[in-house]
Amino acid sequence: MATTSWTGRAARRIALATSGREGLKGTLLSLPSSLWFLLFLVIPMGIVVLFGFATIGLDFTMSYDRLTGAHYLRALDPFGSVMRLTLRTIGVSILTAVGCLGISFPISYYLARIVPERHRGFLLSLIIIPFWISFVVQLYAVLPWVQRNGYVGQALDSVRLSGFADWLFGTFGYGTPNIVAPVLIWIWLPFMILPLFTSLLKIDHELLEAAQDLGAGKWKTFWSVTFPLCLPGIVTGSILVFITAFGSFVEPRLLSGREGNLVGNYIYERFLELGNLPMGAAASVTVLVASLAVLYAYVVFSEADRAFEVASRIRGGIAAILPVRASRMSRADGGSRATTEVRGPLERRFDRIAERHGRRLMLGFTVLVLLSFYVPLAQVAVFSFNDSNNTVAWGGFSLKWYFPGPRGPEEVRAFFGDEDMIRALANSFLIGLATTALALLVGTPAALALVRYRFGSKGVLNLMLYMGLVLPSIVMGVSLLAFITFLNDLYLWPYLHVWWDTGYASIIVGHVTFSIPIVIVVLMVSLREFDRSIEEAAMNLGANEIQTFFRVTLPIIKPGLVAAALLSFTFSFDELIVTLFLKGQGVETLPVVMWSTLSRKIPTPELNAASTVILAMAVLFTLLANRVQKGGTMFRF
Image (tube, rainbow, N blue to C red):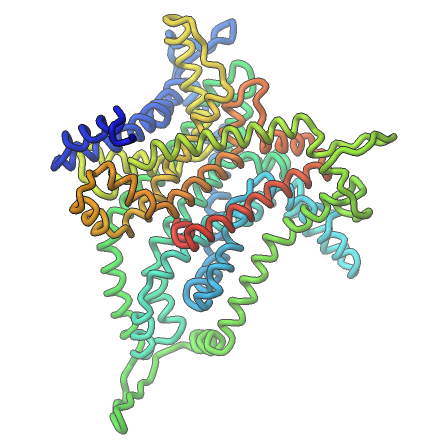
């Protein structure tokens, strides 16, 4: 029986040894994740800093005997390439965050405050689905819409607006530097919508009613109450979007010319060039420092969140009263109160429009944004069944881009007949499953420790958790590649005569490193909502802590586990940037194969077929997550 096995006896002994010692329990439960973060997150970042001081020998190998600061001096040169690209990247990232905030606010407000609850889950699912889809697929989907000879250009030509089309695509179209920020806004918009929606949903509706009862109009209520109380969501979403945009290099590489390059492109190119690894490391430290500075600001903000929320509510109440000048108050037939508001003409006009048409305007805006998501994706799916190899003009229905047919004069690369694609798809599944299993194994006890126990290293673990969440993928990929190179050069080969080749193991390590924080955050939501009296009842009936955890706790938090597993698998399956640095020779994943094809500027319906498979997986995972956990944990992630 399981209860008599050696694992059961060991578990009981551990439970007895830690009984009543909460700090020890927390330390033991969090130890695997703490060690993982230390080994594969913190130490690699330190090694990247060291690589920036290294020199390259005549045989193009790294040398640590003669350290130099020349690479950092070049990176910090105010007139050099790195600083110029860094400043441009900061500008594009700020523009992306501001653009996402401006577009997301009416959508999030509509979903949180206006949509009936019975329809909210469906609309949120529509926001969630692009969140699951690889941004490589999204980039491929948007290509026909940003090219001069694409759909928008042809539509403008048909209504005799060719001159405007020439200006539009010459300024913001494919191949121009100005296209980067709009596309980044389009791709990362869900990262802003979801935190904003969560913050808006938490606002007590009675506060808004109280402000309006005191005479504040729609505009004053928004700025005095709603906006201050949803600042946590604004900050969280802005940081996620800013840091994600700051580490971008795939989008500029595919969509803009060299004038649109960001600092990520410089780092990636230096790591591809023989002998330029130290310069690439020095440049990546600029991204690392910026990310850590933003992370520090976020941690400070999070620690002050409770006090900030209380202060915001007080300020909101006062601000709602200030604009009102009570000129006459009378009570009759139950007590009516009349007030005269001090409002400007623009404010009165805004309030009138919001009162009469606000719901319809926000609904229309939400529908337009959803169409901007799904029309390009639908176009990709439709043209995967195109008989022609044209990805814009329809030539009839065919399945030849999915399944190989008889060879004719024109050889067609079908998705399920392409050995490279199938091997890459299998690799993506294999790596995704291994990543999910390891992330759950390491992250679940850490989430339990962070929610339930106080222990000495809790603050450090929280810091590393935040770091794993917000660190740009390019920095993580560069750090782990530097870490593996450092281990091989100084320890593994000189002392053990073994060599860690980049490939499956390195990719899985990289994917697990960014998946563990996702698992921890999702499970912390489930554990905080868990009714611990159920566990106490089980232990009162004779179950020990281990039995209670496996028989009571795990089944109840299963929705959170499923959500964490699906997110972890999807992020691993869709990951490109970390994989590019750690894949080595011969290991390709589906996003990498698609990236290499797009980099050669060869769009084919076979890519449409591959994108449609990924899109179908995203829809399936969203439906599965909703069915298992009814939207709760996923939408609060």
